[in-house]
Length: 131
Image (cartoon, rainbow, N blue to C red; front, side, top):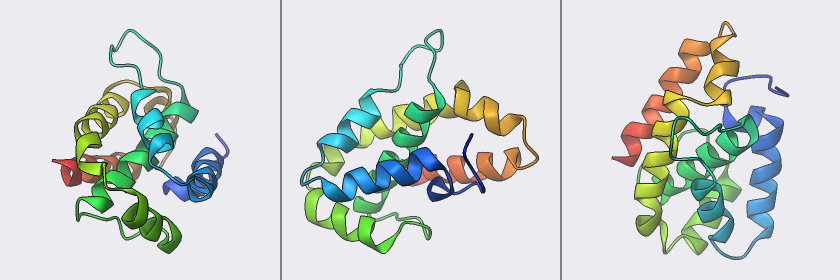
């Protein structure tokens, strides 16, 4: 999984995506990440897609006034500068997080670890901050 902890930035895919976001000058990558999560449970949501969508959802929650304590300062500043469309993306963020929680490779990978309930709690917290 390339992960050392339950935080999004502890995951190689999450750290790489954060760097991509910081190099961009609009919210397009965030929107693409959220819309890349399959909506039907019968469609497979791979881990990389899931992690990117969770990070994108964290940015949306932050822009809406409900940031994570773990959101890096650079990303917080980036979403404040580029996140004027964040409210429009809130439904997509809620749907993506819900889908990842229900059925995804990300969930399956964490379910096989001793940190599953920590991950589940953090991800449910994100979902509640998006409501």
